[in-house]
Image 1 (cartoon, helix red, strand yellow):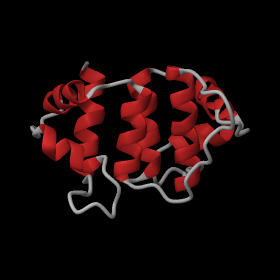
Image 2 (cartoon, rainbow, N blue to C red):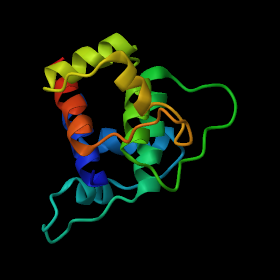
Image 3 (cartoon, rainbow, N blue to C red):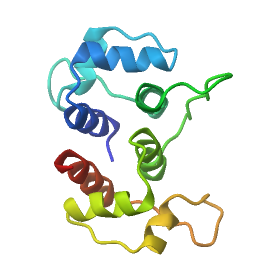
Image 4 (spheres, one colour):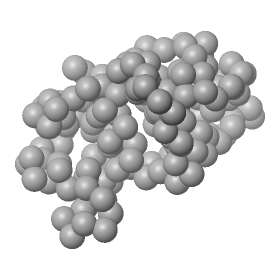
Length: 149
């Protein structure tokens, strides 16, 4: 999924303004100005559109975890330089503090029915034989379902 779309959908889900988005980045110890955040939230094709790379999205999601769940003691986790849908899904699940049953309910609200085993496959390590890639439709369904929740 396009990182800018994830950023935009999370902003809409949580009803954050651009200033709050910069505060979330700050919670992951990343300084970013409001204009840059605004440019990343524009749609592709807009003259001022700015691409959000994987590391910046991972940083935002780490900051979101800190905002919604509180900071852990010790050093902050480093943002991944590459993040896929599975990583985004995992970080959102942690930030929103959802158990497996709640995630399944949220997905159902978004129009996707999964079993608990299918869901757990998304959160396994990639080298696990039961690992499964999370497709864009599943991630979008989760975000839409979360908005309806």
